[in-house]
Length: 256
Image (cartoon, rainbow, N blue to C red; front, side, top):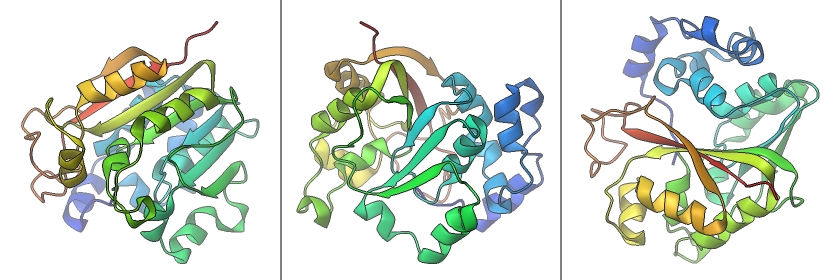
């Protein structure tokens, strides 16, 4: 699951300008990152998460319709909302397990009083994701794909049917549209029980799942790589909290 950085890491990051690299970003993404209404706790995450670089890599444009899958507290949702602008639309989706980690106060702080008017909050199951076919320009799955292997009560203490999940993503994505996946790098060899307990996933398996559904891997990035972080160590280990070795994949739904 996604969790905030601890206070020590946040304090250290606060001393580094979260927009130090923003001058090289597209104007709509730079504007989203530097918006004066962004919460201070979000700014502390920017250095470690590199949202400007990630969303530029993903090809985010104004006017897009985006689904932020298992968006948790909405860190990325808010940036997406500002970047797609008034003509764009963002769906902030959380399944029952993710939603259970969020308080009403957190949700009100993020989405209350119409502060992100182009965002629709969806507290719905994400296995599978449901939306009108061929309508979504971009799907973001930020440190959440491995959680389809997380055994929950909502899934009768089992993991999701991940092939069906990815097939549902394929169905709602427009031809030519994309899915960006960021996750903690897990061992190349593993099974559902490993991903359930380790809270990581194999990049190789991730690619196989998306390609089996019909997507094509079009780009990867090492922007969040940390080779010093062991692939069999929990991402919640205090030594590497917020600094795990993460892979970044961009998948595309082929055009007819």
